[in-house]
Image (cartoon, rainbow, N blue to C red; front, side, top):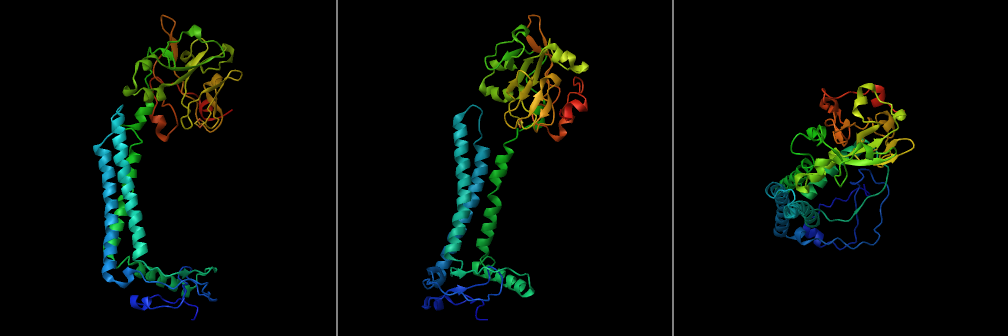
Length: 380
Ligand code: FES
């Protein structure tokens, strides 16, 4: 068939002497039978490359490709080694710099090796004939399917994927190793120990004074007026340095303190002892995905999360009245000490922050007073 593919199996020498302005029309891209010829729009004749004409130059190009793929593998190994051998020491910015430097260099070399190796392979060794791919509807007929298989084999033959086993194997090695640094980095996102434990316990303990964030000034019950909202941390946290994990602990223990008129407080009787004279304390970490719930509406006594507008009703144990959060903010049981300062009765009795499937396995069974399911899982 005149319009059918003109196979480009000419030898290198034949190609060298080809002077006609021939456009090689292939149907292999679309796997269809061509019904109309494509006229040469004036493309220059195909010029064979040095690697087409001289086998020894093709071998040299092959070695170059292989070295790039090996360099890529080396880069992946360097990235992993750097992660292990140059760890980040808390508070030591030099260690952060060196860790990032070597990690970055390793990952860059890994990606660059694959990119340059593939590019060199394509430019020097794969077929470089101009191709014309006609646009037609593809049909799943048997001849076309047969032709598709031929095309696949042709591509394999021309790229040398099966024949050049050294390139193929080093490419497979490079592609296999390249994602490994990402695995190492993703693992680094979670704490080394039990991640759930981290969410289950905060700094709050019996007798911890509630203090202003960030000054650490303890708060007396008399200071909390109706309509005001206090951003609160445990008083001990103010003594902590950044090297000791100040920010990590603050992210867990932050609390919002609000005083409500007693007639507005609809407390479950079992939890009535968790508040003091209308003053209630709730975790500031949103139960949707963990943003700080920082906005307090005085009139409605609603707490708003600015991230996705979850709204919690402080008068009803901070149950969700709007938005994507699915459970109330955990409540911190409070009371006052001998000097009139607000103190925690104990830590939260359930994990703070975003919900997760095993959450209920981590509630403190001795101290937790569950809300009714109507209070916890439904919205007004
Ligand atoms: S994090 Fe609060 S609503 Fe999404």
